[in-house]
Length: 94
Image (cartoon, rainbow, N blue to C red; front, side, top):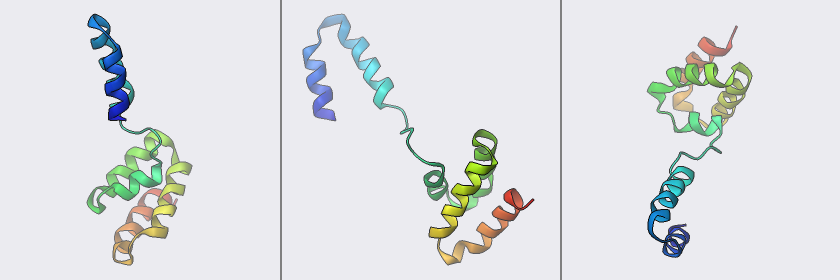
């Protein structure tokens, strides 16, 4: 990707160069939008999981976040089960 960016920038000249750089940063500088909810939950530290589930529920809805959380349960270490059970009961068992 870096080689492609350098090649593209070499082809541009003068004032167009800065606009192109800004455009490239806008395209490639953002966080990957293909990250699934389950991946976000897997990346979240155990201490912040309760808050993250709350934020995701407000943003994406109950059903999607619940499915992602169940996927997390399938791959989480058994040592984390007590915390995961507490978070699940708080957000999804109603």
